[in-house]
Image (tube, rainbow, N blue to C red):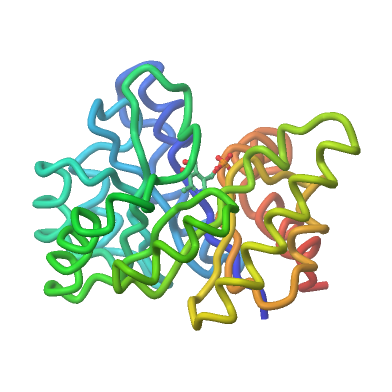
Length: 239
Ligand code: PXP
């Protein structure tokens, strides 16, 4: 059954607006899990703009499902991940100025560097996933790193606007997924997915997990987190 990882970064974004303790990250973890999410995702960015070091320690200590830490391959962050030992680390590119992760990791041409980071994480019992664009060369490059899990970037499909462009981007995701499955990778997907565009991606055969944040946290303002998570799971085929 297709799984749902809920990215709770923007619960922390709201907290940072006042710099206090509300809304509580751990309450969000508990609500998402009670509603049936399959993993909790959080991105410890180098600039700590939302999730911070204490958050990831606290998440790790209470998570009942799985903790998927999104992170760059920055040395300081890698050392923190080795210490915290989340269930999984998803390696993403990171630029200070960006509003959110803008594209996939450049694996092709950087295999050695990524392999080394992945091995240091695996040494500590952390599963590793690479966030990549839906591109055949990137999928094949993942194989050369020894990493067995990918997350396909669905951002361009989600942001497409025009139907023709969305169709084209969707086909790229589907093709990348098929190639990855053929070479034995576990395939996840995420970025920009919402209550309108998720069904099509959820329908791709062989995808293991979708990671969704902004749209769920946004809906939660109106419905509460419990209902927002349940509604997303229902759209993913869990009715
Ligand atoms: N997957 C990855 C690798 C991401 O970087 C993000 C955003 O932090 C997400 C999924 C969730 O994206 P969104 O918040 O647009 O649902």
